[in-house]
Length: 390
Image (cartoon, rainbow, N blue to C red; front, side, top):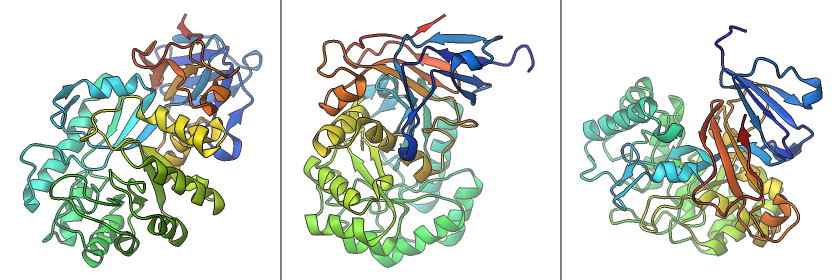
């Protein structure tokens, strides 16, 4: 290994969560990452920790994959005109989230709806978040809102330019099943993932997208299946869970009762691996820096899900659904982590038990590509123990 190659060693880990539901807890107390990728996981006594450029003493805290927010609406930089708020992405990082996925840059004032304009905006958004990572956050952006009049060549042009996502189908003029399906199929042909708006209108210009349309369009992710904000009737939510194999995205800015219905239906189907989490912010409900942690705690405590599995909804499930190199702790994956502990004086003897009681953990550190991006969170309750950079 070249002398100047970054080597991260995290030692004295009290609990390691993998992000993978099939083996959610790893038998390991140490992790090594070289040049931003995980290279070794195991017991410190068996590992070569020499030559580290950064060593972190976890002090017995919990190491988990950095959380992923599957549904955000960024605009430009670390600013959202929807709430006229600066630094919302940095604040989200302090909630343990290390990756954001755009469902459309829909809140841009004067958002272009002509085809040339919407393509230009999507390509620009993809570029500026590729070139500028606020506080180190990974922002997958450039998600065009599809409009009537688009043709197959438009999707090829977008894909050739590096656009990998479609914004929520239904936020633009395309709200019918046949047109939506045609455009989603074009996007898929060129390697672009798609999400569909589900439920009642969220902002002026959007509309009701019911289960029939969702199933006909066949997008990769059923966006905010619990409504963003207004959920579909129970029978339609159950129908969506039962009638397809797509990602079931539950969001903070939705209906919590519908969220639990989705969770329970997925469990009955033995398909909890389909559940992924987002915030659907910034939006009318504001910005939720702790939204993903709150969803983990809510689904674990009220949905009777072991906390280590609920964390998978916000990490490995999303990683697999979105085909990411982050969100799972295994060799070769990106070294994106959150270090957490039970909040001070919170009920529960362990962090997992505390989360199962509905409490948020305290975030002590985030790491992205093997680089420390934040230390003690300014937003979560204070952690009982904190990791330290040696």
